[in-house]
Image (cartoon, rainbow, N blue to C red; front, side):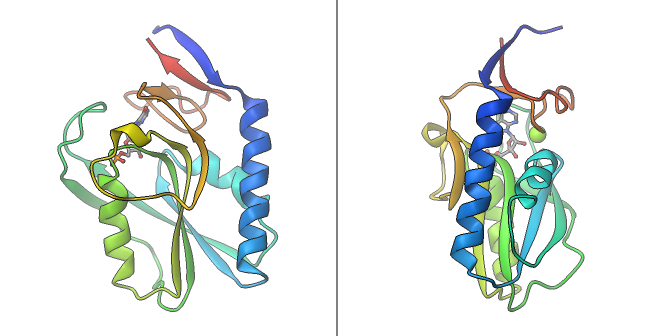
Length: 171
Ligand code: IMP
Ligand code: MG
C-alpha cells in the first residue's frame, strides 16, 4: 500500500464542484448541454457536477488511452470508444478529471470539433498548468495543483484508488 496524503479534501471538492455547476448553469442561460465524460477518471466528477447543473442536460462518454505509462505521456492517443451520438449543433462540455500535458484533450477536442458542435468547452476538476505541452485551457477548472501525482475522486494509479473520496498525493 502506497502512502497517501490528502491534498484536496472531500469538503473542498464538494464546495468547488457546486460552484462550477452554478457557473455552467449561469453561462448557458437555459440552453441544453451535453456532458461528455472522459472514461474512466471523470465519472465521479461528472456525476457530482451534473447534479449542480440546472439545465436540460444529457450525458455521453468517450474513452481514450495514451501510450506510455501513467506518469509519462508519449504524445500518442488512441480512441477506444467514440461518443454514441452526433454533437452537431449542440453545446458540448467535455468533462475530464485532470488537465496535465493537454495531449489527451487536444486529441478529443479535435475529434469533437469535426462534429461541428454549437459550442465546445472543457470542465476539468484539476489542472497541472506547469506540465502543459500544448496550449489547451480549461473553461471550468476546479483546482490548480502542483506537479505531483494524485489519486482519488476518480483518478487512478494503475486503476486503483479511484474510489477515494479525497484527492490524495501518492508518495
Ligand atoms: P494529459 O493528456 O497529459 O493532459 O493527461 C491527462 C490524463 O492523464 C488524465 O485524464 C489522467 O488520466 C492522467 N493523469 C495525469 N496526471 C495524473 C495524476 O496526477 N494522477 C492520475 N492520473 C493522471
Ligand atoms: Mg488514468
